[in-house]
Length: 138
Image 1 (cartoon, rainbow, N blue to C red):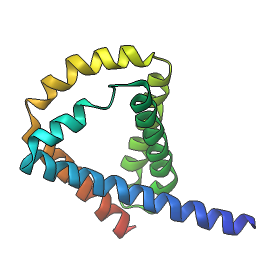
Image 2: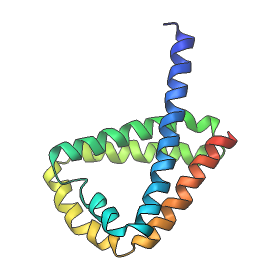
Image 3: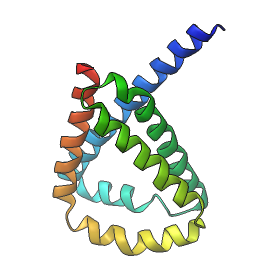
């Protein structure tokens, strides 16, 4: 594989990952509004086991790297670059924390956040739509 082919592949992969993040956020918004019990169960499950903890961290790293890679070709590139770096840096911090600590924090914080599930849905819809629009406009 040539260097140009590899760059084209990485570019395409980053576009797909960023688009999937946008679609995920829109899906989360719809779930929060139309099947809130399922959305709550989903959001409460992330730190429930070591496997889920590390899956979440892996997905965050992949998404963060994709945003950093793709941001220069997106509308609002500075904001999406910053978002990608925030994901990467906070994930690095979570990698240094034992998953049981993450679980304990999530057990306290997530139920409090879920009191505002409709607002979380609105924010998810706005950000997910913004991601897809910025990706398409870039």
